[in-house]
Image 1 (spheres, rainbow, N blue to C red):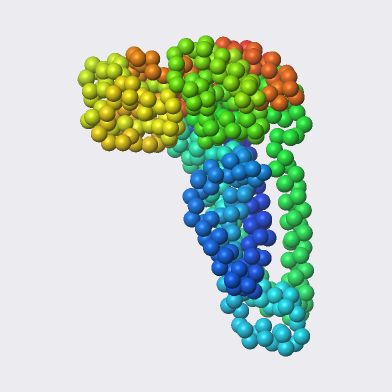
Image 2 (image 1 turned 180 degrees about the vertical axis):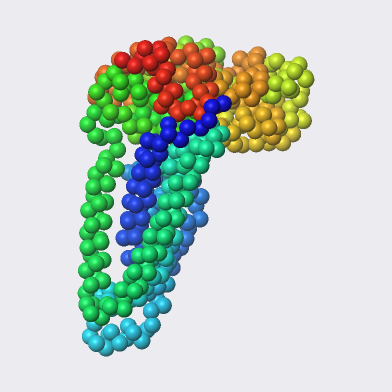
Length: 520
């Protein structure tokens, strides 16, 4: 295993830091301009305050991953990418800002506000010249808390294609690469600490400035107005580039699921399109899984990605598994065209079927070669599967029924990227993984023969939105030329280079394209 190379990830690291900052900056500014007025309203209308605090408190209790998942299906503000990610961050940032604005204002000495009224000050003047300046320390504390929350929660945005430092964390989890996890986690921590420190300094400066506010009572209001104008201008610029998505000229979006092979195949499409056409490619990788990618390409949140024929047949079309690969492909192609307006391209050349795996030492000890032979040992064994395998038509329930697999305890559920390591470390005894995974021989695992042909064929097939192909017909030509270019052994080697040689996906794909003369 080669050492982790920071330099190979440094350009991407700068990109991800920039994406993370944009997510947090945009969300926080919008949250401030929503949260502070809500806090002020709460001090004026106590019945409304109960409703406001009930809503923002309820939002805060929703698990962040559930929030991101829910927003995928919400019209207008939902989908994948940065827009739903920013919406989620705004919602999580509201509670500390609203609460601290409310507390800061109601704690202002009533004698001071009464004195202001006696001097003939209007309600607006009392708010901006007395209450907000005296509450600014409490309000800034709420903003500090919200920033830290936003920086942390923003790492989840990678699960729906929002980018940011969470890309490294999710990729590190899927490849069991601690260095990649730290590459995402450490900068996120630094951003949170620097932001907290910076707001703290600003808070101290504003507190000291209050000593001089009597010289010019309008200064604070003027400064707030200037900051608001500058911030809104910046938000306008960001919004122009952020929320238009892939509507830019000659730009398409390629997606990928959240495991190594899908990242490689997504990069394979992206680099080929970049090298052979005049199109720009935006990558939205590490999307949560099959259903997220399918909804994204169907609604043109992404323009294309690589799916597996058996997955499309059973998970998306909800058909019973069959073993005829040509029949599966033709039915998927026809159904995707008629139901979803999607074009299914020819296979890239390999099949990545589900593989039932056990440790090599167990296979030798009990002389197990097929899934049928393992059934008598399952009452004493513990199984481990990923979430999608448990829910799919061709997943656990059908497998258990076909092979009479009776486990004493329910299967452990975990991320697909952790399954192989957990099996090798004897935390579970049987898992379902991918047949082309490079970790299978390295971790000394045995792939059991599917002797009853339970699993359908899983050919790697590019799927594109037909509107995209009509707009950019050259894409179809390029992708069709890739048919049959990746063998099963080549795919396993590519997976190995990323998972165990610790090379970047970009480097591995680029080397493959050059070696096989596919880079022109």
